[in-house]
Structures are given as C-alpha cells and as structure tokens.
Image (cartoon, rainbow, N blue to C red; front, side, top):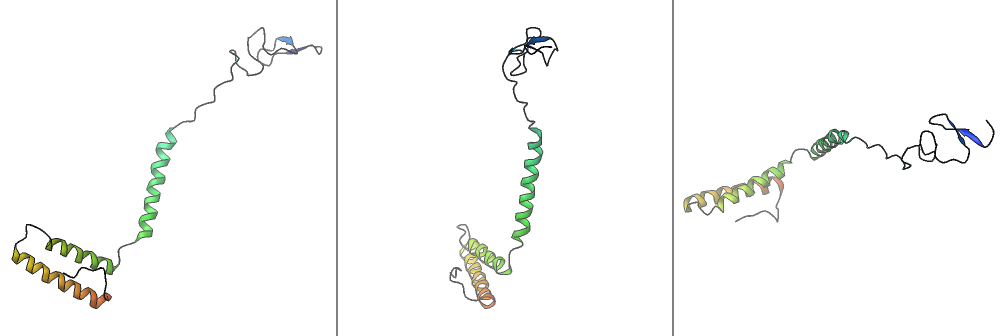
Length: 125
C-alpha cells in the first residue's frame, strides 16, 4: 500500500488515508460506529446497590448499638422516677391512687438522692 491509502480497521478494505468514514462498511473512523455518533457508555448495573446499601446501614447500626452500651444504673433509676410521676399525673386516677403513687415517687426520689446525690432536674412533687 502506498501512503495515500490505508486499510479500514473494521472491514480491512482499502480506503484513502484522509478518510473519516469507510465507503465499504460505512463505519466512522472517528467514533467506530456506523451512524457516526459516539457509542453510548455502558450502563452500570444497579443491583449491587440493593445489596450494599442495606448491608452498610446494618453495619452502621451494629456499630452504633455496640458503642452506646446499656444505660447506667443512675439513668435507669431516673427513668423509673419519671415513669412514677407519669402515673401520678394520670387524670383518671382516683385520689387514693394519687396519694399512694406520690408517696412511692417521693420514696424513689429519696433513695435516688441517697445513692447518687442530689439532682436539680429531678421532680420532687
């Protein structure tokens, strides 16, 4: 072959060296497609996301749960006192029930303060 011609890389027919499209197979030598438009990039599959995202979220929840640990004894005592006062605030409770619950709540507060020290945020009445 002389310098003015070359072989088409797609069909191996002889074409001019300056050609941008093969006259035999119709393929564009710039894009490699028959239509002359560049090929569309291949779509990446989405199915790995349906597996990876839930696994990552589950792993994060496990880490957060492992780092948080169980509540301390002080926190449990404080929650118990809060629940006691919630029962006291029940609008359907009778006067006798409220009197009993208030005494129980005050006793819980006294035990809490004896064990953990005085707390300004704890409800007393």
